Image (cartoon, rainbow, N blue to C red):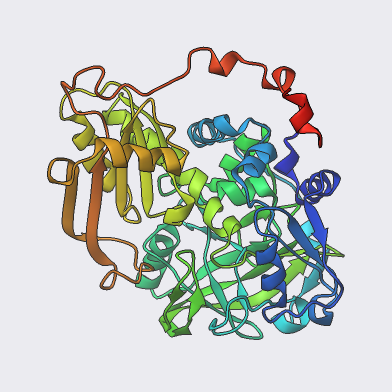
Amino acid sequence: MTLPPGARLRTWLDRLQETGRLALAERGVDLRFGVAGVANRLDGTQATLFPKPGGHPVPVVSGLLSQRAWMAEAAGVAEPDLVARFQQACREPVPSAPVTDGACQEVVHTDVDLGRLLPLPTHNEHDHGAYLTAGLLITRDRETGTQNVSIHRLQVSGPDRLGALLLPRHTLAFFRHRERLGEDLDVAIVIGADPLTLMASQAAVPLGQDELEISGALRGEPLPVVRCLDSDIMVPADAEIVLEGKLLADVREPEGPFGEFPQYYGQRADRHVIALSTVTHRRDPLFHTIVGGGREHLLLGCIPREGSFLSELRRNFPCVTGVHLSLGGTCRYHLYVQVDDPAPGEAKNVLLAALAVHYDVKHVTVVDSDVDVTDPTEVEWAVATRFQADRDLVVVQGTQGSKLDPSTVNGVGARLGFDATVPAGAEPMRFLRIRVPGEEDLDVGALTSPAPAAWRDAVR
């Protein structure tokens, strides 16, 4: 069986290079702002490989998945089929395949000094310092053996110490259980995972479902995993780098500020702490970094959310045919929902359900099936021509939102809904979209050619 292009990191880099989407930076680009600056300038057009960044022997790579089309290509599907493919992988996970040897453990360090072992970029102007931004934080429930995989911002606070922002999700649930018992929680941080595993790590699935098994489903075969040296956590065997350690019970230390996905800074506060015991890696590892607020940061969390939101809404509203988290809404805060022939009043019910589907969702716009839900210009057109504020606006005050949204008060704020569907009972011609018959069937290439310099003669 042929694996999808994104099943291995280095194979994906080969694919990007062959298609002109991998840029090679000059040697020695500064780790402080230099790597992030180059990556941002190429954001969405090319991934970047940085040899000897800041003089460090380990190269850095960034921008692996900075277009929706790239994510679909990595999964081996057409772009319109990506969300459905992800939904299927979540419904039909494939158990991982344990192996005894993994490339990620070719070299072992028990004297942990992150600054010596890894190239540590500082991205944005007011970031507290260097951060690990593309590490998959893997935890394991000791009683059940179930794992969780997620990405968290990890501040380098010392040679073997990390500060971690844990939002109210599954990693925090695992940790709180251990902390109540007065125990630390084993963790592994995987840097340089393959693109499919990166995508799988962001799946919104029930507590106890191992996202590595979603990666296996995206691959079409079990993901090879190897046991950590200091715990029972299983990590992708072909990863580049693995950090092993513990989330410390009853310990909080200052973390932040850090440039986050809304393109503002997450503020400094006392947060969770990870103490590292072991670092393993390939003989010649690659270090993956995700620049805060860039396309890779936004899109990695977008596709999994779209799949989850679509499933949730369709469960109660069969009229829902599509969803889209817009780039302008940070791929988190603005949700567009497409409906087909809703019953009178049903669009507003869909709107209310969509506002409640996740605490990140702040503004929801519901449109009809003749509007391309993936095109913000089309959605804006629907709002401009089908929406009246006194009739179609829904405001819900005092709700839990994103704590990273600076317009909220500690995460509490208002939510807004726009019903931009055609009003029930409207006269057919009143909202009929204009069209030119036969336009879509024209062979424009055969009917036109570039105008010559002597275009005046051509029209005589």
